[in-house]
Image 1 (cartoon, rainbow, N blue to C red):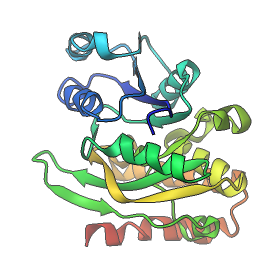
Image 2: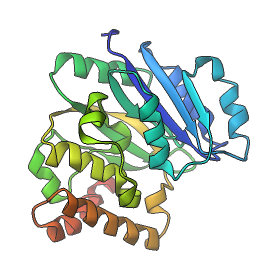
Image 3: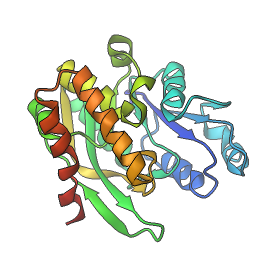
Length: 248
């Protein structure tokens, strides 16, 4: 199990209140063969001081201006040397110390390209607001508004060479577009882990306001059209509706 090398990328910008929880959740993992990459966008608060306190356990660290979160992710992918790549953003943290063990085990036991799992959204007090429970992968589910939770999405590094990295053309839907490109258009294989892998604090970029959400849906639609989703108008209606059960 330990032979599989996982490259884990954290992108951060002015996250002094959350970055420590993120980093310690990575360093506390019981899986040891991890290459940890931190990409900072040029933070101006105390974020850099916090990151430097962990520098001896971070494999690669860059702090420089970027063109946004997905540009930072691409920088991390370029540095990665692992067999598998995953991303844990600065506002997120692992649900327990066995997450990477479970992910590595899923890759080792299955001849699969991608592994993903479940996600929980937390409020400022740490209470669970939403539960993103996914399901076993079926390609056609994308046509009904389904998608994996991106913070739980791990894929083999070679796929980025074959299918490309995050496209900045799709704004806040760059992660959705990449998953469509890999799993729907690319017809790759995926294994679902029926467990919560990541806990995410609310306040993501695409969920900040009604205007941001509408822009996000527009980017989603463009991603669907680009990857030739059948009946994208139907899919764009179904996609937000699927979130309703996450509050139940």
